[in-house]
Image 1 (cartoon, rainbow over the protein chains, first blue to last red):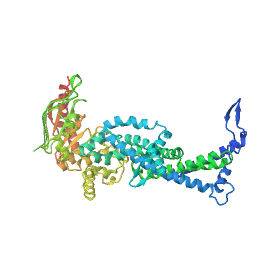
Image 2: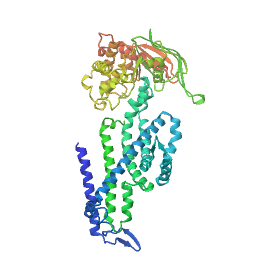
Image 3: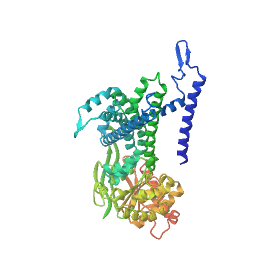
Image 4: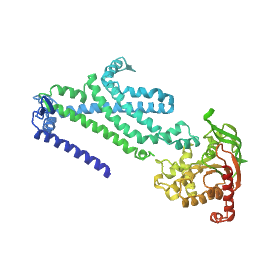
Length: 289
Length: 257
């Protein structure tokens, strides 16, 4: 419990430090940035490039479109966008997690499959996301599952899972193969079959490898969801909001920063969700020998 | 009925020029309830012999019967329990759950499992540590948990591969006394691999001395296993004990010119 309080405390201090640094940069550095010859080595710090922290926070409470009094506030827009993206990222994480685990199990079970599939699993991550996004949207458009027409957000979820499955597949495979030879032989002498060995030995042993993998995957799923929203043109998420706000950034810079802030909070929430998983599996955490 | 019967057992690893001839012409019979130790230099194949009996290795030729069955069938029927040099306890299970593992794997229901595990923990003197994590126990205690686990399915045969090899001398002697008591109470036959001559002599009915590779039985020496009413420490100080040690040592030299 003390450890957890300390972690939260450290995060708060780190955030406060960031705010102080930001404001200090604005205070000390010239508004035009620092130039050596024609090369700018430090960024511009005037209000249009780096708005004050309080301006950004204040912008959250103002209407999205300046002057339109009945429009929703920027805060509400960012919150709803972040929630939308969070749902897609979590969906992508679950989808990718299941896919990664099934793949890892199959690779553990059949050594031939591991040799055959692992290079492709690695190669899959070198394909740029923006290249596969139109493909997924294109395929999705041709699919109707039991009368349910493919929705744009489903493409986002699939693309997000494409990033999330990788760390889970690799981490889980390592974890499944983690038990010492002596432990595997013990289960053999107990006449335990593959399933029993999996359930009572390999899965518990894989937890210490799986937890950091899920943490990586959660971060990847969030990035994947945001980038996928942008590259598929899906509306409603924080990715779309960032693009929209970026277009008017010269006139309204603090609005762009609210969206970026929303994306950062989104990442924190996703990481926190994984933390809960960590708590539930505490018993298996220290089982690396 | 015999606990283990080996006839003309051969074991080679690999083939061609790189073949390792591990065991050659092993004939050995273990009677029900008998305690037999295998002793010999490193690499003489004594562990391999144990692993063949446990169905962890396949013999190249010769016949192996465990309680009248093939090793494979004996393994499936859980006719033997096994303990290795490393206790090999599962860290995410507490002590009683580790002891229960063989029963858990075989779908014995929880109440029965708990009752049997409690019995076994009492047998090895660890009742108080049922809820402890393996890492909280000393090496000797962990090894006792491993022995209790090996005994869980009530096997007629215990296979032990240097189970006390990693323990200090004092703990080791105490564990030997414990093992003698357990073997007596369970009436299980024991096939015991060791490097230690005194350990082999004090525990065994018979000590099987093996030669370096290819492992052959060079001599079988009568051990000094104490009876039910004898004190193991008296045995350790008896002249018969020292005579047997000398005999085993000379047999080991003979096989190792």
